[in-house]
Amino acid sequence: MPKAEILDPQGKAVTGALERLGFSGLAVRQGKRFEIEVAGEVGPDELDQINQAAEKLLANTVIETFSVRVETPEPVPDQT
Amino acid sequence: MPKAEILDPQGKAVTGALERLGFSGLAVRQGKRFEIEVAGEVGPDELDQINQAAEKLLANTVIETFSVRVETPEPVPDQT
Image 1 (cartoon, chains in turn green, yellow):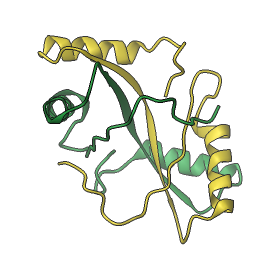
Image 2 (spheres, chains in turn orange, cyan):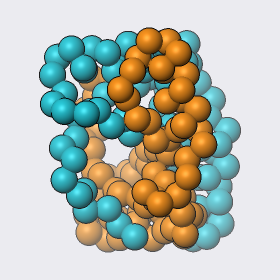
Image 3 (cartoon, chains in turn brown, yellow):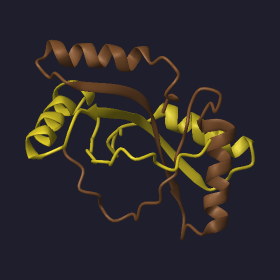
Image 4 (tube, chains in turn cyan, blue):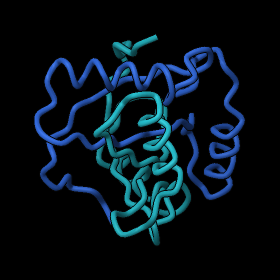
């Protein structure tokens, strides 16, 4: 996600579009999401590797923050 | 996130770049993440509104799935 002090024109545009569609009172910030599939268990080593990958390649840490979350692979109740 | 049956060239490019950087065995898919700030409590009405906003504007449900998650606003332990 863009850091709090960084302008987010995409998020601003989405906020404006939502308002025009009748959704008011929502402030949106837009960022990226990566789903990384790992074969086998995610232990401390794998997590460390993924944190390094996020810092080196996936996030621009000058302007973005990132967080890593482990999810189990059983079908998540996604909507549509 | 792009649906499983949808090609994800961005994710493929990231997977390739990670391999060249020495991170092997990771399969990446890239999607979007929106953080939506709501004033006050998020009750069933607010959640319903946000689900509608996601379906109408934020996600392209022909090729993307989405999921909505409520987070409390206390500072999340983001990394860098």
